[in-house]
Length: 290
Image (cartoon, rainbow, N blue to C red; front, side):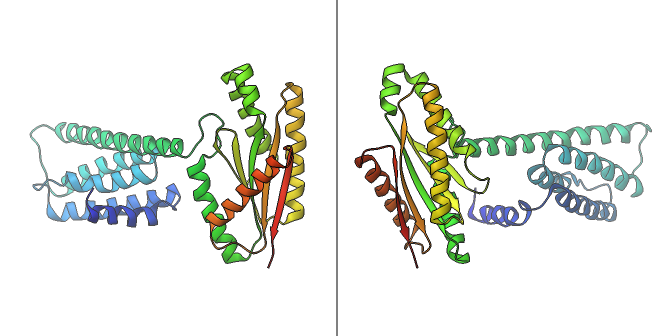
C-alpha cells in the first residue's frame, strides 16, 4: 500500500467509521445518483463500470454486506436506465435486461468480496486484542485502553484506579490437577472479576495468572469496596471447587496522575509484589493525592 493510498484510507476511516450505516447508505446513494447523471450526460458508448464500483466499495466496507447488496441492485438499475435514456438500442429487446443482470452479478461479487474481507479483518483484529482462554482483553488491548483512560482522566481531572492481580497458589493447582483444570480456574477467575465490575471499567488478563483492571472515576473508598467484593466472590468460588487459590492485589488510586502510564503501571506492579511478599491473600493500597 503506497503512502498516498494510506493517507486516503486514513482520511476515509476517520470520517466514515464513526458514521451509522444508514448515513453511509445515504452517501452511497447520493454518489450513485451523481455517477448516473454523469453517465447519462456522457452517453452509453463509454464504459462507466469502474466508477459504479466506488459507491459499492464504500458501502460494502463501511456499512456492511446487506447495505452493499442494496447499493449493487441500485447501481445495476441506474446503469441500465442511464444507457436507455441516453439512447442505447439493441437488436433483441431482452439484451439490455441480460446486460443489467450480468452487471448486477459483477457488483454483487465485488460487494461480497469486500464485505467478507472487512469481516475477516475485524475478526482478526478482535482476536489480536483478546485473550482466547478467558475472552478478556489481552495485554496489548489493555495497554491501549489504559492509555486512553489515563489521558481522559488527565483532561477531565478524574480519579483513576489501577489494580494488578496475581493468583496465589495457581501453580499448585495447575501442576497438581492438570492444565485443563488450570484453564477452568482461570476462566472462573475471569468471570468473577467481570461480574464485579461496571461496564465502563477495563479488565484484562496480562498473561499466566496475572490480571489487571482499571476503575474509571473511582476514589479509594470505592476501589476498596470493589476489591473486597472481588476477594469475597473469588474465595467463595474457589472454596466451592476446593481450590486453595487467593488473590494478591496491588491497587494504585490516583487523584493526581503520575507522569505517565508506564510509571502508574510500575507502581501498581510493585504494590502487587508487596502484597505477595506480605503473606499473600491481601490487597495493598497506595493513594497519590493532589
